Length: 255
Length: 211
Image (cartoon, rainbow over all chains, first blue to last red; front, side, top):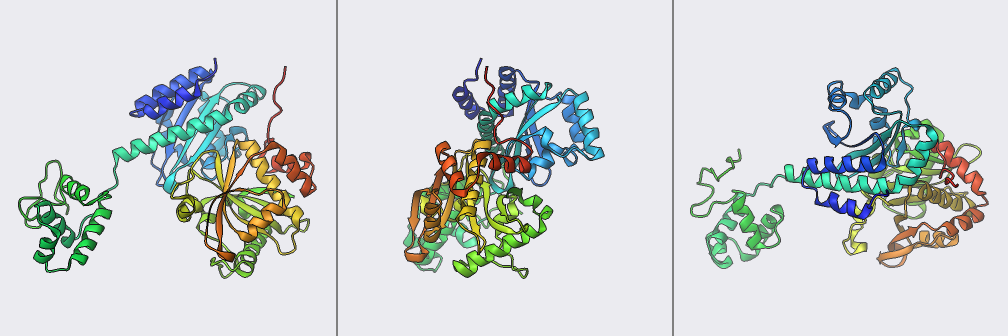
């Protein structure tokens, strides 16, 4: 039965966490009738995570043994961006051959096909399908599914980027004392003219402070900037923030 | 012959690499007057050469660079999305099926056949890896060259005037186009496929299984 690609991609878009991705990978593996499918994220500093159908023992061993440094699939794909058949990789070193033998013992399969994905800022991931079959059957499979796999790899990666972003949002840039004063007084309901007078600056300069604060907070307009500054605990309304000792719920005073 | 070489493998081809980056300095700095960076070795390189791009390079019988171009996937960092969003109304071009093509360069003595061969190489990449489009930034002179070799792109946006007018264009894969480009380059499909296989260790396309 052929995969309903469109429906599948919609399901990927709707995934809410790695557990959902895991379920979708299992589904894809069963649809394709292959041994394994794995999505593997590797950051430039060597941090990695993934999900897929390899046995937990193999996944654990891979991490424990630091196979990221040995695995010809990761090493080979990191510097490329076209889909790679494992037979075309360099398995000649002793370490690579030992790794390959061990992977087979853990049921990874003789054949493999990996789609490298390059994301923003040097982010890198792989979608890999592996299976135990002869060359001819494998060529037929990869030829038939390459395009589909490229698309699925891309969707998994977009989802992973989204989940990663939600887990570790970009740190809010801190505001300068003048920007803090400006937003605080505006939040208290003073007009721009009044705020400019209170800070002994021109309205033109005040606008520059508002604008840079808005940019730092990634806010659409002044009201949005004020709301964000309050939720982030950057300004405290009801006293001046510089005098306040922080303690906004759930947030420590920035040191 | 055509070679397909990733940035990390350029060191396997020292003469080809050296002459390629020198020819790029000649074309982009000396002939076109672009503000590019040329290092003390006379090599023109930019930040995208450091991102492990894929180069398609024409190697002359004497082992020197005859022409080349550079590809990067648009899901990662690209020149267009970093610097030329103004030409596409701010819309980033990002797709696993679109690769960016930049630094199309010909050696000073290179003729139209080499340009055509490079285009044919681009076509093989599309066919092999299910790439549907290439996107690129170019100026008016390049636009004429592309037209001359029978591979004019669709223009997505343009800005500037006269010599400085630059455009973003999109090339779509077209099987009929492929034979025409090969023909103009004086290449047979078999030759082109053999060069591809030499670089990638695989065929452009396995024979479709029939029956």
